[in-house]
Image (cartoon, rainbow, N blue to C red; front, side, top):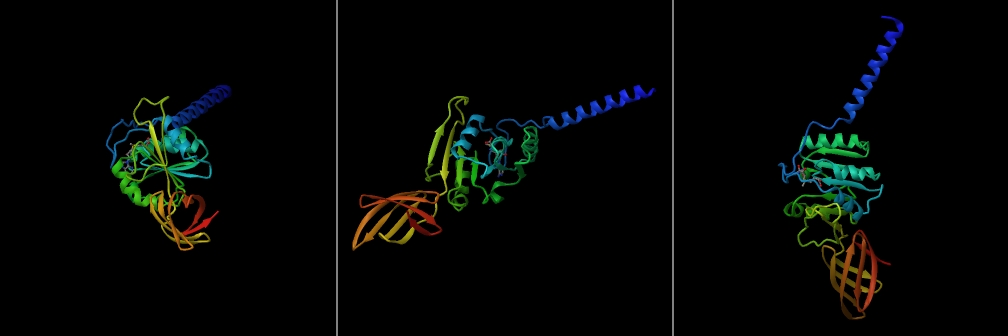
Length: 258
Ligand SMILES: C[S@@+](CC[C@H](N)C(=O)[O-])C[C@H]1O[C@@H](n2cnc3c(N)ncnc32)[C@H](O)[C@@H]1O
């Protein structure tokens, strides 16, 4: 073989190898999940992409956040968060879905910010999340609720469709455009600081009872007691007593009036 022909053959070989490598990197996973397939505690149904976008909008995610999707399916919520510059983790029990998610993240070139782990969400530590997303079931949300309420105050929880029992959502939104009528509603909760108890304030003695984000109680000053109604959103506390509105910040168990 002449030198020129040899060079042409090796160039062709290099081009074919590069193409094969590029295709392998972009290759869709051989695994094709089917909607409704069995999962450990919940079947797989993907959240419509418009609702994924809405859920992340409602949580007001920024690059300072750390999003964890509990039961992450094909990885779409984690990948969408990563595309917004946010670090995100998917916890998924089905190992094939985990591999598919990793491939999807690589295809979208967000593998550095989008991580996936094969684990049972009930056995997982998600305490480092600043935003939790989920599309599970009402009874599973209820089982997770005590752990969620122990997260750092201000952590945002967004659920596709399913509620959290008597812990009412702080916000609910339904998307119409781009959603075919199923799984089009998102609910947002903000983990409230725990402020129940008695607080000695310059205004008097405030005694609070707390039911999730709702507050009730009394304020006693100069021998007079008036009823209190209020709300807590993350660390921000607002209450009214004696016709006046008060704002405070929860600092651990202490309330600091603003
Ligand atoms: C309804 S799908 C939601 C998928 C994804 N979060 C979304 O919104 O598109 C629920 C997912 O949870 C997974 N799953 C079910 N039980 C689980 C468990 N105990 N631990 C982790 N993942 C679980 C299922 O395999 C499934 O992918």
